[in-house]
Length: 458
Image 1 (cartoon, one colour):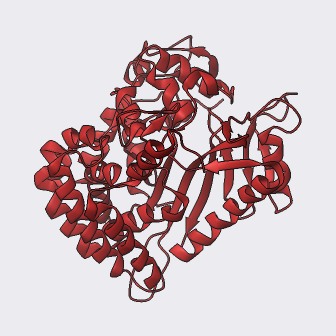
Image 2 (cartoon, rainbow, N blue to C red; image 1 turned 30 degrees about the horizontal axis):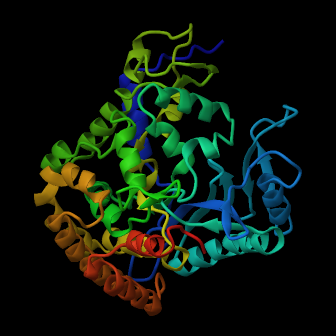
């Protein structure tokens, strides 16, 4: 019988080092003259119906024509395959609807549909793949009258109106844990929608460190530029990105920016790993994976569990990996960057955040320029993140966002033509002229529409 070595802090450190600085799961394709990374996105959308001019909610489960069954039916016509959490259970829960290329639909706790696009080698491929999945949602709109909106928070319904629609044990445990802290956990789970940009870490150690630092320092700027959640439960909420405000109230031990002081001083991978290790181990546990029905509700940290069995269980590496998936920093580190700072944008502008991040992180010369601009601001980045939920209310944040957006356009323009097209650069410039340069964001459009009609309808 093989003896399993106990999990230790050093084992966790080595695991993280391999995760962040080992072989990337986003391998860089060979592009003549340039080395550009792959990219994927995860976009959350809100389903709704319109009846007699009024917005009505949509249930994920329930009667025969619930959204889950409709989405499965339409997806199967185009090669989608429904995969369930536990095939042995009679009432098994849907895990995802996966297509042959790995792209998939998933459901979030408040019935948000998450559109997940696997790594793509260029922006044309990425756009065509998300348009394909959105065309299936348009088919649902045409045949069943269910529409899909893109906002940072659900503009029509409150937490209790929506309810916990996906009763997975993971979600039940997360809700129980967050309920012990504040009411914002339920708001996050049921009301929020984001565009998560997943990017390659890079080939070499230096590039990976630079991208990790830059992505973190860009968080408040991106939040402000792409703010799109000023309306919640049919009322103005007082923010431009209420989604960001919700996340900032959630749990400071598992959210926010990574501590970068040591990394910026040394630029060594050991500092990156140690910073993420400390962040991970000091975050409270939510549940024991082998006994998911046992909710811990913040009694212990993972660091505590390394030395003290919980309910007669000692942790192994799968427990640590599960714990990592329940951390929600602005930039989550896997074998790639998960950038989580952006509200779900309007459909016509949904690729702009991808252009923004690929330009600044994939253009090496402009990556350095971005760092030169942001590192002197590092001490106030936490404060700017708080301010970013109010869009461009802060003068310093607005001026910095203008400068960064101009740099992003220049950086994006410099990427090779087999990665992006000129019309995409033109779209980015149009966005800047309409929004950032005029101290506006998507939220201002929603507020203007709401003030005119006292409601958001489309």
